[in-house]
Length: 295
Ligand SMILES: NC(=O)c1ccc[n+]([C@@H]2O[C@H](COP(=O)([O-])OP(=O)(O)OC[C@H]3O[C@@H](n4cnc5c(N)ncnc54)[C@H](OP(=O)(O)O)[C@@H]3O)[C@@H](O)[C@H]2O)c1
Image 1 (spheres, rainbow, N blue to C red):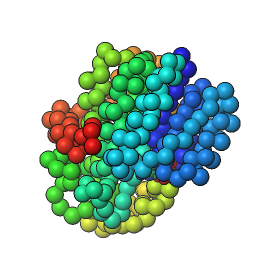
Image 2 (cartoon, protein in one colour):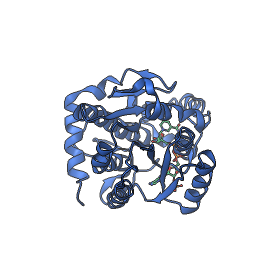
Image 3 (cartoon, helix red, strand yellow):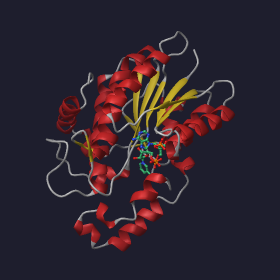
Image 4 (cartoon, rainbow, N blue to C red):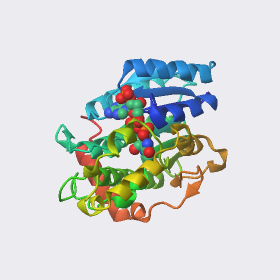
């Protein structure tokens, strides 16, 4: 059976570098993005990296849960044929918004960074189980450390700060990742989180220069905070993709699950609040309420 992978937001930034790493490792890769021209360029690059296993682009706006459901259907059909089973899903999509926005009444960073990858994963579990041994890789962030740990509602109380809201959505997704790993023990589906560290990409270029993304206390220290952001996101996306590639391919991880792969592409201890079962339970309730499997 050939190895197959889906990489969301795989047509640019860290996702494209992840997809290229998987293609070079012999995977037939499907990349997901919104822009068809960017998708076509990514497919050309992927096919050069692995001419023997053609790649493919699927279009979806992952900020729309209806589009996520439709995407899951297309992926499941494409991987239903014998010999084509899905063996790796990399939930790489992520976004940070300097100003608050919502889609369909749900705050956008929680939607893109958690509900969307949650929904895609849940809908693809039958395909991943059929492809076992298989792996799910959820891309996390060091921003989990600045998150408000309140998950009674999609948004925590108080004013909106993009970096903190982004970190909180990533924390929800990390708690879900560890919870899912427990749920899937014995199925042959391994679950990992991968922390890319930082890289210069569209996401960081577009957001980290705006002091409004941090809470007022940190804003007082903005020159220092900004320098720290600049330093931590100055590296290439190819280096930031290594943790995801390792999580998806490292033979040394065979049989292991619920592991965070750190920025140096080795296992690291999870951020402790993400291991709190009450937090995971609250995230599960929110996810089921706001991202039902049938729309
Ligand atoms: N960069 C960092 O320093 C850093 C640090 C920690 C964690 N991360 C995480 O790493 C992951 C990748 O980050 P990145 O910096 O590479 O992001 P990025 O530069 O925004 O990634 C660009 C890719 O995302 C796609 N994309 C963006 N929004 C999309 C949407 N709504 N639906 C479908 N595709 C969408 C783009 O496709 P289109 O062009 O078609 O829209 C493109 O393929 C994210 O989960 C991020 O949170 C990044």
